[in-house]
Length: 186
Image (cartoon, rainbow, N blue to C red; front, side, top):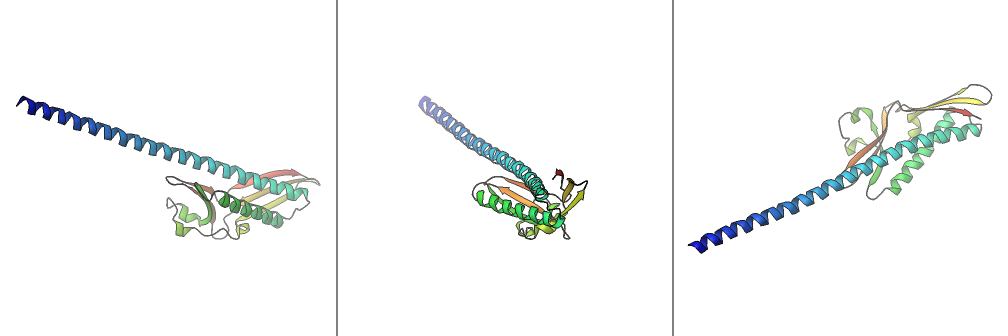
């Protein structure tokens, strides 16, 4: 009898130790998955910030370049800004076509309020020059004040960049009302 109890006790302890070992391995796997997801989220946030800064830079540089070329026409400045942004969006999509992936779309502002936008709510980036309005004010012979505003056009569309990886999604947005103001000395 004494041997059976000893065997049962040893067997029960072995199963308990095995269960603890399996739970520990499972916990380590879950911790590694959580860490990977956190890194992907942080990378997405970094890329979103990079996009924001690059958009500001592209618009500012385009305005300066156009004024220094003596191009004061708001429509032509607007067209140049849209062209440079479209080139940047295409280059960025090509550069980030793997993991993480970046895709740019247009979406109606009303669909942004529904939480995470659905794929079918996105349309391709075409005619973005209609979504911006640029004004130039000639202060004196050599000084100009230029404001480029993102209006969203007649259908109130926003430019959205979807940054996604295996476990995380982040959205970049040029919101309606976004403005870049620049004082340029020509």
